[in-house]
Length: 112
Length: 114
Image (cartoon, rainbow over all chains, first blue to last red; front, top):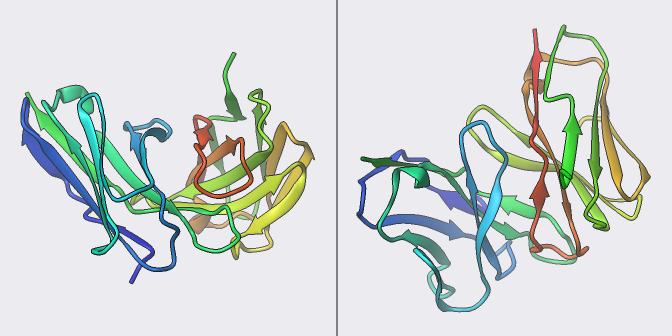
């Protein structure tokens, strides 16, 4: 199993809908998780981090972590065309390292 | 006032050539990184330096040689370029040495090897 796995998509949702992006992880990563957004031709930028089980909300974004199922997700409410981007899930590799391991990213397309 | 800047933005070169990419950060961060992103958007760590000390070398061919003259600069030199080196190379920095801290990325260098 890869350390961090995502469905590459594309995930297409209509404007105003909820977009749900999912990520699974292996035992080889530490228990803190990050969602980066990358617009086409641009660099990744951090939008959410989550460290404990449950939900964390920030505006239209909600990150959810389920450690028992080794599953982390990002929900985007009221999706806008400007949310169209690749969303990268990331976690640090376990142990005494500072390697942030990224998933392959999910391409989100919000249709107007 | 760019936080992490890397040059050049585009690099087109022939196989076998040697090229360098430069990176500078003005955030006062202690740790800098090189990441490679392939055509499928997979972002993979290559190197990490903390205060000029190499702390991560992620099984990268020794044709790639990072150099950090000070903690604000991390350059990447690539010898004998191969077709498979074509990718976008991102420089990044973070405040803390430990994994999981927020990474600030440069705008990327699109390397095309012909």
